[in-house]
Image (cartoon, rainbow, N blue to C red; front, side):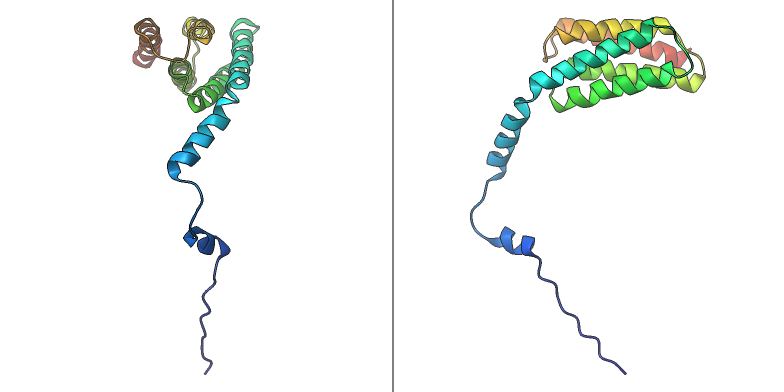
Length: 152
């Protein structure tokens, strides 16, 4: 009969974590925030380009792949805006994702609601990153459009 010998593995990372020094959580978050903020202008430019693509998709000759494209482009805006705390853009793009998903699920497409969302995204690009009462009413209106589709 053989004897089993268990040899514990010593990981370098666990040894480094026990050493004194390094950054506090607050310092690490502050550095990450500063590094992220350096990319805000580029991110907003990327959102602008995506809105242009949405405008083209909503206004161009439409085919069977357009609903999926609308959803994908809106999700792209949601991802970037969420990372940078642009809440109005997040809320509007989330509403458009929901609208597109509900319309695809029903197997029918209503362009009026999509066009309203795309125009709202264009407006919100210039409105700032904080939700004001005016912007909240715009977002609430978009969700009303989305909710009406769910009830139809």
